[in-house]
Length: 224
Picture 1 (spheres, helix red, strand yellow):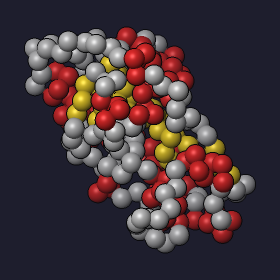
Picture 2: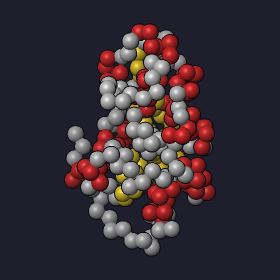
Picture 3: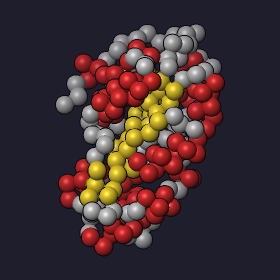
Picture 4: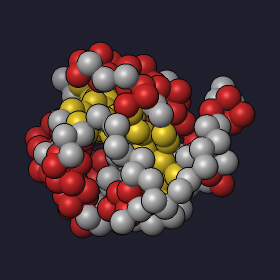
């Protein structure tokens, strides 16, 4: 269970301070942050059924498909090649490329940690130049889902990235839209609530960006 009091940082924000000054890593959730849609698995499963929208019916979260799978005949539509075709680039948040280029100019590493699709995460990472990505997968041959990211234990993935690049939690910013993303807060100096899906996230965040424009994170943290 994630306790808000445990995660509160209590910083006094000052518009004249550059909070990215000593930061070396920014970790992004994907669904609801880099993508406007908050559930890439719901998109993928419904596209595999040749349905574009889920509407008011079943919502396929990763936890659901990991425990229950999907109908056997759908796995042939869940290959990596087919999943790549299900990503709608119109779903990408505004100014993603501008944000990543700014961070690169400042020598800040970027990463995606998502309980969503690793295929989607890899596609985005290649497209916009993100340094590292991890997400969950489908083994379409053996008809099973593979958990690389536990939705409530993303701090473990953040630790792996920090170890890979020799970066400390004090040099890390994490960005998420859901309450579950707060696990990343444990291994970060700052947590940014981007387009927050719940008010519960706001009380435990250092920065709140109520927007789908990713560059608003930069503007808020650097006082631009």
